[in-house]
Image (cartoon, rainbow, N blue to C red; front, side, top):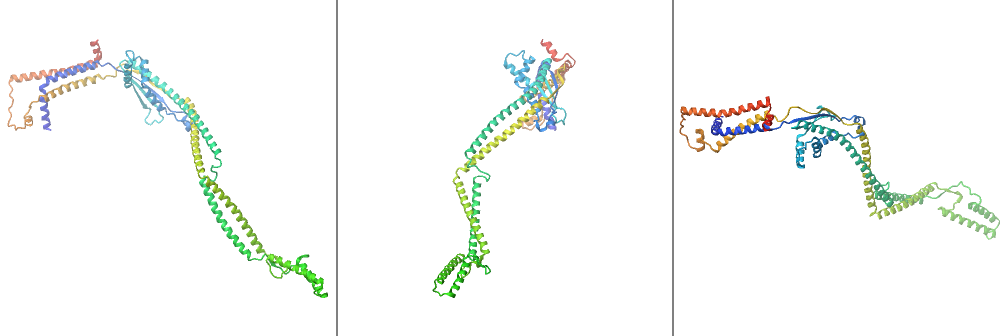
Length: 527
C-alpha cells in the first residue's frame, strides 16, 4: 500500500510541472462547456393519460359461441402504427412542425427524430388485474410548449380513432375472408361429390361391398370354398356309410299273420293250387283242365319269384306275408338327404369357384379401382370437414361481429394533453456540475499526459527502477529565502485560477437557480 502511495505521489509531483497547461485546459473546457449548457434550449414535456377498458360484458354470457377479441394486440398494433412514418407525417402536418422544413429529406429526418422523442407507455391498472384494462400515457418533449401539447393531443385522438377503426376493419376482413373460403370450399365440395359419383357410376361392378375390399372378398370366398369342400367330404363319407348299412338290410320282413288280399298274386296262387288239387281228384295229369291249371299255377309262381327277387327276398314266401322294414326305410331316407346335401354343396362349390375365378380375373383392375375410390373418399372427407369448419367459423364470426358492435372498448381520458410551464430539460444544474468535473478531469489528464511524454526522476526509487543502478545516497535541496518566497508566490498564483474556476461555478449555479437563468442570459447576450 505504501509503494502505491509513493508511486501516486511521484506521478502527481511529475504532473504538477505542467500545471499551467492544465489550468488553461480547465478554463477552456469549463467556459466552453458552460456556454454550451447555456445555449441548450428549454424543453417542455406534454403528456396525456387515458384509461382503456377492454373488459367484455357479453363474453361471460356467450362463452364459446363467440371468439374472444384480442383487444390488447389491437392496441399494441395501433400503438406501433402511431409511430409509423405515415402517422408521424400526419402529426407533423397537423401540428405545423414542418413550417421551417425545406424538402422531403428534412421531413423524413424530422419524422425519425419524432419517433425517438414520442413515448407511449402502458401501465396495468393493478398487478393482479387479468381483464387487460390498462392506462396508456403519451408524452412528448419539445422546445415549444404549445407544439408539445398539440402533438400529444393529435396522437391521443389518433390512438382512440385508430383502435376503433382497426377493430371494425379486423371484423370486416375476417368476415370477407371466411365468406370467400366458404364459397371456395363449397365449389370444391361439389366437384369432389361429382367426381365420386361419376367414378361409382362407371365402376359399379368393381366397387367393394359390405364384405370389404377386393382381397377381403377373395379371402372370404376361398375360406368358404374350403369349408364347403370339407363339408362335402364329410357328407360323402356319411353317404358311403349309409349305403353300406343299407346294403346289409332287407327292404321287407316276413309277417306270417298277414292274409293275402283278394285278386292278389298269392290269392290267385292259392286258388289255382286248390283248383288243381280238386281236378287231380277227378282227372289225371293229362287232362286238359289239369294241364291248363298247372300252367297257370306255374306262371303265377314265376311272377311271384320275380317280384320277391325284386324285393331282395329269396325262397318260397308269399308276398302278402312280407312287410316294410323300418330300419331300411330310415337308412334310405338318410341316404336320400345326404345325396341332396351333396348335390347342393356341389352346386355351391361350383358357384364359389366361378366367383373366385371371376374375382381373380379382375386382380389387375379391382385393386386400382378400390385405391382410386379410397383416394376420392379421402379427398371428399377432407374438403367436407374443412367446409363444415369454415361454415361453423363463419357463424361464430357473425355472432362475434354483432357482439363486438355492442361491446365496444371504453376510453376514458384521465389527464388531457397538458404540459408544465417550467421546462423539464435540460438538467442544467447537473450539466453545470458535470462540466466542472469534466474540466478538472481534462486539466489533470493533460498534465499527466505531458508528464508521460517528458518524464523526470522524482525520487530515488524512480532512478533505481529506470536505470537499474544502485543509489549510494541523496543530496537534500536547500532553498534560499528568495526561492521560498518565489515558490509561495507560484503556489498562490496557481491557486487563484483554480479558485476562480470554482467561483465561476458558484456564479453559474446562482444565475441558474436564482435568476434569470443561463439560457435566458445566453439569449440576451447572443441576441
